[in-house]
Image (cartoon, rainbow, N blue to C red):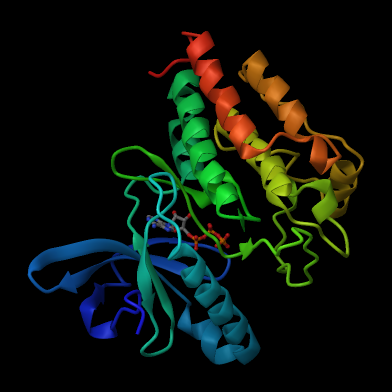
Length: 293
Ligand code: ATP
């Protein structure tokens, strides 16, 4: 039995009191794992809401498969800027994925809550830490596919961690992926042009596109690009035609250049995460105003 199988008896949580948040298909609760000879370990427990399980069997199977995939993938990753995976609990439905608890919640909610009080230096630090995590995932041939500030978490020590590999898939040897398992709730605003069609081509370079939409969010206090009343078709059409929304005013010039290079239509021309990490590190070295804090 893999050591990442957690038995239900060891996992304690109170879903009435300790909900951390809800995504499109899962609910996340604060809990802890009881361990022999060691103090209990605080964790985040991601589980499927049971009402949906009873109603829709296929939906449940799909969601369980997605969670198992996520669990299997996350077990392979060990990096300070990637969420730590502790295990999966599948004794009884619902299946639960257990990870490190990030007391700071999502980067998105931090940006929205703290707003203008965040210095550009701090924003650059968030971006650098996320780039470090993504550079690691790229080296592991992992395509995230749903990179956005809502999928980056902040640990108790303030470090940003890449999370939510629900849409990830290891790169095939050919690195060419066509996939018809894209969910109904498309994260269109973060999607690269080559992924918005019937045969989407996801790659680390489409993650690079999403990463720059996340940079946009970071400099826009967590507000996502495009007007909220723009409909999906309009946004999809604009992205496929190489249009991007005006970057937020506080975005530093060097960062704008980086965003432009990442939003090139041809994925091959975009930098990879190693290049991005070098660039953002240079930015903080060259420009003391951007240096943290
Ligand atoms: P989706 O999974 O549909 O992309 P999402 O990323 O918002 O959406 P989840 O990953 O299910 O959804 O997380 C929902 C919320 O729960 C997050 O926005 C965050 O506030 C909270 N959360 C998730 N994981 C953790 C964690 N490890 N530590 C602390 N809070 C978490």
